[in-house]
Image: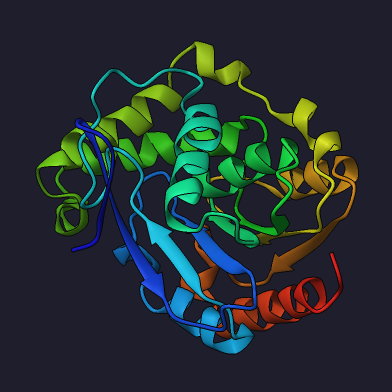
Length: 258
């Protein structure tokens, strides 16, 4: 099992997908309750369609990586974007161009990361990213929290093992806390200069089209892609439509000189 040791208490599980070394690496960032395994076969399919290599990893606290070492803070998304992600890239794909593909929390991490204008970042793709907190988001999290407490989300233990309770409550309690209702990263969007494909399901139970509208209106090169008849996980619910949209976008970005 490939493991990257960032320091003694921070071991990161990762997976690499082979592809053309002359093309950018697709870096996949999972959702707020996700892991490498929960992407299923979508990363491999997108890498095959584009000819790119792929990198997936479980963030600290998730999947087969180390458990959380401290209580989650309101700025946890920033921590993952500005601390952990750059270290993973530096150690695993140093000096290589890359594209970030992020789902939900992973999409928000991608946006924050892109706002720093890393020189090797070619583009980003977001699915169901949040840039502010909506009532529909909190309603969806309350419903998930109640389901978890009722034992209806036991399948998460397949992916997170004995970390399941900790990571679930870190997610739900942070989002439902009083302070987090004011969380907003729109101020970063005008600093995103690379091309961005902003995707969301039309029936997303955790966010409205207002998230997409805000990103597209404020980032410099962002294009919307609403996926019909689809909830919060487009790459699993409508994989063919999502694969086609991402492939077309990435081919344009990759085949256009940086």
